[in-house]
Image (cartoon, rainbow, N blue to C red; front, side, top):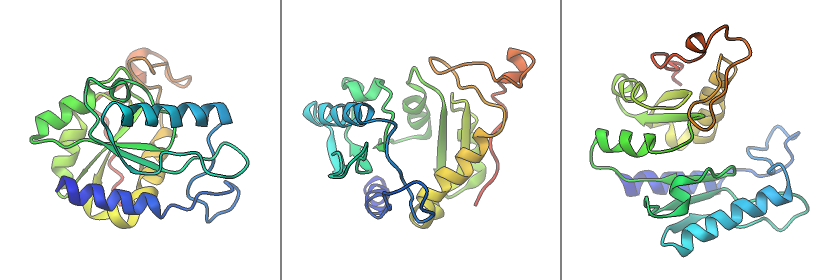
Length: 196
């Protein structure tokens, strides 16, 4: 299943339309600056030099501005910098797992906690797993939508939840300006239930 899922993600990422963010057909725009783009490209190169496998993208695009190809890497281990670093760019790292407990452990083994998603055939189980995630926002999504809606699922379902009260956790934690108290701010028992 890991190989099949990875192939679908690689194919889907390769089909993303990178372009002007004001064009409605665009699915991914540029990074915030050339320096930011170059930093992400360097993080990917370092991951590969440490043993990760580059499955798609990884380079700056040959056009004016802070453009980068959508990227997928696999084979990242806890000994590599990319495992513990925050990569603020169009980079997906895909990790295999042998049990749900292992998947949750790897997903939660981070100093960062802005958002995440859980993909599965059984939405009830995906929601149960999502409740174990340590991120500020977690969406439970049906696996059948990976191929046809990978990009839209991430932008629509996960980002729609960002409009809700949110402030992140761990290193990326901050209080939501609309929350009265830290307790009101962060409720781990709330899982985004908007499924495609």
